Length: 164
Length: 143
Image (cartoon, rainbow over all chains, first blue to last red; front, top):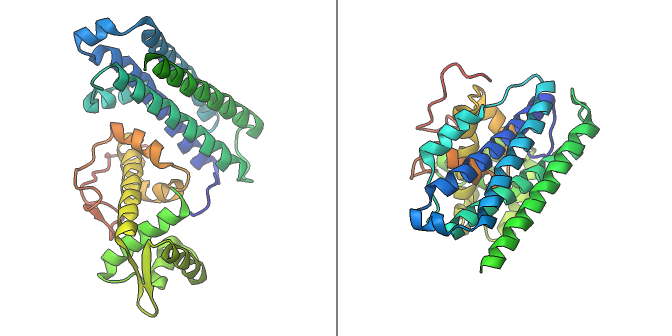
């Protein structure tokens, strides 16, 4: 059992980036499921802001996934396809009851992704391992994605406050 | 998962294996650290009311410590299941041990939305095999 919070080799880094991809796929899939899952009367009542936010979240996650996949390619590892993760989300999706539930779930998604990248950056910085990919580019990519997740958390929070 | 939670999980599993208090030696072996490190952490956890330590016998979790250990073991089970069933990793035990310190509880909760886990988790975790008794690894994992 490793007690040090650091990434010690390419294999471990690839595994963590794979987890990042899956988290993005979960965000993407759940955001897509949310609107479809609402009861008709709720769906009609969902305003444009919420629709736009979910659409943007889906698009942003797909973009993050592509950037992570480009890093994973350099480590000679594979990722789980979006279709596979979407099928798992499908199988276990417990739809939120209403629009507030949708937004709350979206907030959890964004916060979790932020926390994941924050921990990963810390673990990479704590390591003196040499990776098969450029460390600066790795950190720049992760930091840029982390900032976008942070902005995502703010967007959902502001929308929730406006609706309150 | 932070270091304290990793220790609490180890104490919980050692108590189950030994059917009594968790000895320093067993914990040192499970955590791959020195007995001195174990004793130091045991002292800290005792001062936080998470376990009780009796000299020459070992450590026993308090109710609060047991609750934290349960949560930590659930998180660990989620990581193992995710590795075994979603990423199809054959060496999922070894990799879970290497990754648990980097995976936060909130991240594990999200991963939990796509894995299949029993309601009685973590009671079904088998300390001898170091994984859930019901976990069925994917055949021919990609690794």
